[in-house]
Image (tube, rainbow over all chains, first blue to last red):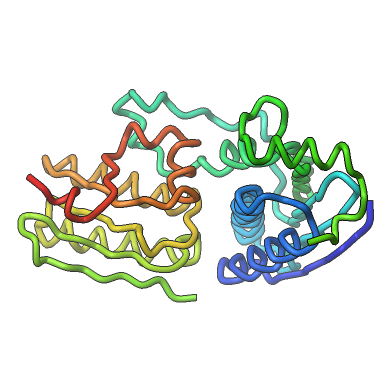
Length: 167
Length: 112
């Protein structure tokens, strides 16, 4: 894995748009990804940054939130590191089903389920000193997703592992 | 980054809110305030036109869910207009396509 980019942004919600723009532009320019997959990564990164910034604001820690983009031949990985209180993803409460009228009482908590669906690999490392989120997108979606365009790209990437800087 | 919000009462009983730009944790509070104001003014039939939205995250979804809850508590409704696949996908992933009535035009959303 090669570090392609490291951003340190103040823990303020106004900086998330910048992170989104930078990461999605980089992914679009340097990776052989369908536009839809770039959009998926963009949303996932935005959600992770929202959580990171909120965690850090809640903890009162003034350090920047760090975003790293790493590349390997077949994947792009985005890491979001905060210095908030850390959290255990396994203890998050679930939502009632959408058919349940109580579902409308849940305006928050959609971010992590979204990230899980959007990226091919997700890992949370929550510690008392903060949380590291690792999100990976391959050339195509994970096997349990059915997206024709990305499936084709995935096949192409597997068959042709030449550098991703071709048009 | 500015969030464009244009409130249009030209189609009674519907109030159409045209949203433009990116809806995230930074900009969503403005949308929430606008919806709250409309409900406080007695508006009960709200149509939110997401046609000009380039990005919508879970905070934006939360604001829309909150708005729907508020108008429903007053026997009203909140309808969405959205045709962009990248925005519709966010509703589909979260299962919210079954919670909201989503139309492909303001005309369709405001048809009796």
